[in-house]
Image 1 (cartoon, rainbow, N blue to C red):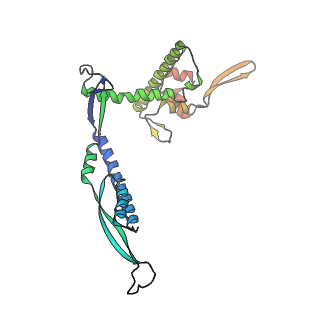
Image 2 (cartoon, rainbow, N blue to C red):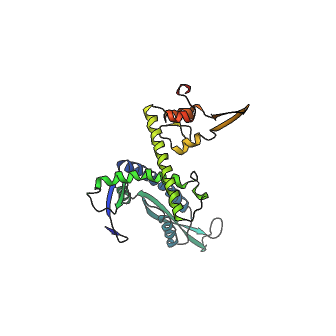
Image 3 (cartoon, rainbow, N blue to C red):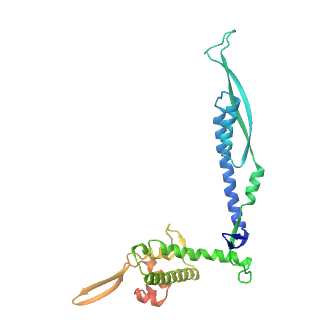
Length: 272
């Protein structure tokens, strides 16, 4: 297939998990629409119209909003006299009011057509050579992009403070990008290492909602270390330094990164 003058290979993917999830959402939408439709029809049935055409026109306005139902209309009339009280035998002043009521049923044809679209999505690639990447490999490659995208999202947020750096020379911009890429690599390696260590030791750390997790983000772990710093104390011309504000949790996290990290933070495994 060719799109935007670029030859592409498209792959239609079906996911059972996505189908079940989207089908549940579809059922909720159908139920919600039925509730809202019945409410609108009840209010419409209480309105009086001057002619049948006006009544049907009001009904069509409601039909524009529905997707999964169809309505069968019924028109009824009531003759009313202009004056209050019991009309006289020779009274001629009267008017006819028109009322419209609707009976709803599910549009099974439209619902089935919508259901068939659930759990399916299209993946496209401009790599036409199936020897380089087969149809079966396209989906795993697509899923793997989420890790890269999450890394770039981390670079673009305020944690990297890139917006505070203004560079003109292209060489300096390239150098900054190189440093940021290296930082992202270290970030990703540290996150992977910590998650694997938690699984090996069958341990967890609290996430942002104070719930235990074995897959914390490194951004959150860095927040846990807020306030940790090096303190220097001068006593009789002798300076002593130490790491302050370490908690039991942060010491345990440090231990997962091995003896070198414990040495830097002055943490002993026997203290944990």
